Amino acid sequence: MKFLVIEQDLRVSGTSQGIISRSFLAKLRITYPESIIDVVYLKQYASEDRLDLLPINSILEKVLDLNIPFSTLLLNKIYWRLFNISLKEKHIHKVYATEIAKIDYKRYDHIFIRSAGLEHEMLLASRDLPILKHAIINFHEPFPFFWCAGSTSYLTNLELFRMKMMNQVVAQAKSCIATAFLARDMQYLYGSQKKFYALPHQYTEKVFDLSDTSQILKKNKKVTISYHGAIQFGRNIDILLDSYEELVNSNQIYQEQSEFVVRIKGVNLENLRIKYAKTPNILILDCLNFSNSSFEQIHETDITIILENGPLYCNILVGKAPFLAAYYKPVLSISPPKSELRTIIKDEKYIADCNNKEEVKQKLEALIIDRLNSKEPAYPFQDYFSDEKFKLMINKILFKD
Figure 1 (tube, rainbow, N blue to C red):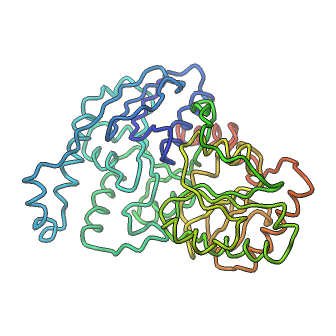
Figure 2 (cartoon, rainbow, N blue to C red):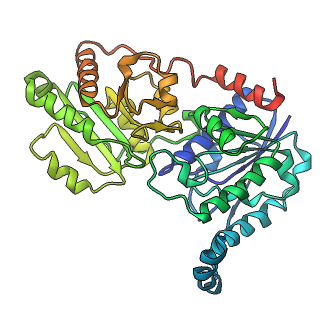
Figure 3 (cartoon, rainbow, N blue to C red):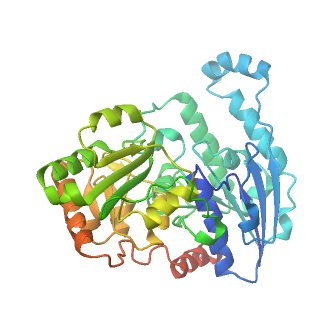
């Protein structure tokens, strides 16, 4: 078989989509070892992405010029308000479309167009292009952004226009894929008679160079808890840190033998440091690149935290989940009442309600006690991210089983 994968993000650090997309290519190679896998990589700016680590046959990499002409910016100030159409977005889509239209797609048996970020530029750019009816399109996030659970954006006429454009993309595409909850929501949102297939995010270590450990923090206590990631879309870090603070202040063993390392972006770190200044067990630190962050989570962490979007519902699968599943560590997912991780994590000790401080506290304490007494591997995700499960799901998508 011959695969063509059109990618927007294959970066090795600073982006969950880059990590997911690199791993998707690796899993595709594992599943179909004799196949031809060609990649067209349309990137927004120059970056060193270690493309040599990808198990593919060829890659065409191009940095797009997405600078908006001044005249377009000036006209757009009035245009989008009058017509609910963004000339800036139309310009960006045209740049992507020009490159996508150059691709000789007829040589391939299967074509994937994979989105990145919140704007889904590459999917929208493929609208009305001949390649689209042969392509499987991937939704990384809800679109439009208004439908992202936990967002505080408003439903505007501009958002509705974006939805109209995407509805045409969905109608023209061969198939659509997303993680399970998102696939269900997008199929319902777009009223599509075309099935949206579920395909979870993936992680494969071999497509990354994890040799940089220059900035790691060595663990100082018997049990190290850590959270690495962003605070956005209703993710609740305070309920977690408040719970841990109460635990260490009430029990000398936890105070002496545990610590909580927090590496986050999206909030004012100094405010957090001030809030927890009286609890030296809580370390509020800057984020690291993927190599250093991975080393800390793999080798210097005993309990890893996941924060899902909230407070009521999360319709995305966090990109961190398959990464953590690969290393068999206990996790505590701070989750809303309805989320995809609640359908994956079957053992309740690994998941707590993001709105229930007492539950968070109890489950965090139980995991600390467990790690004080045991270092046995944990399997909170079971085999959900395994090669075998990926093969079953991708075959269903490709061959409509």
